[in-house]
Image 1: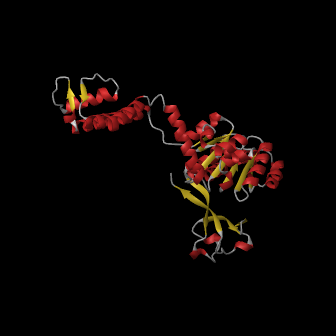
Image 2: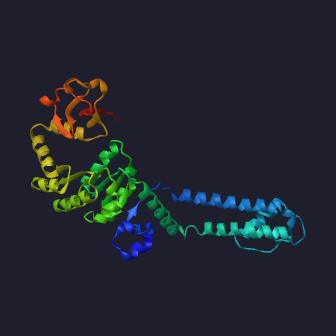
Length: 353
């Protein structure tokens, strides 16, 4: 059914069968070394060999060699070896109907499986493609409440490193980019990747944006960021959209397009550069707050029951602001002299390296 829909509408990526998405959508998997793969194949081959030898040995009375001697286990192992490898010298043969039935029903399937194992290296590409198609199918069924990152340049990569440092799992992050080389690096970090332009709704749908909890837009151009934001908001009305732009004059465009938060990268960097000329230690502290791996970090948490009614200035944590009804109110404002149930606190937490 999916294949027929794809033939009628080849541009609709989400209607493509899973095998047609291999190469565009990539699901990370545990990588193993070539030596480990070879070792596993050799062990499996030995298991098949001894299994065949054991089967023949159990019915050894039904087999004879050219001298009409009964078979030892070594003879059975030899017979299994020449049989599974299709060498077939004919010096040991099944002579009774039961032994011939055993060879037909059990030894022949083992021989076929053994041959498939031997040519496994040749079939590795096809096997990988089938496995990736299966993983894509499973991922598309269960992906929910994840984060989609559009752009894996400096901004996108830094945002992902920050989320990973805060404890988010790599499997909960999907990267969308048009650069296959950048996506290789993202896949190396264990991230799900989608090759394509996020300005197309079908590419975002393929990334599961319609089920995402948040979407980070870290493109290199402001006009692209606006178009991606419009597309993302259309298909993900409930997702939190955060976008980065270069020029402050484009903030209102991102807001009108549906972005919940807008970060002006050039002005932020410019402010830090200006501050660094007179008070460089302030810049060091800001960098420390923005680095989740060690030192201090700005975090958000729920108000605890024993804190309700108290002043945010007198809590055990250094509180910077209170989020009430989805709006940030800085500490010091009269309306947050006392915290209420349902508030969230923006505070400075200590990060242990």
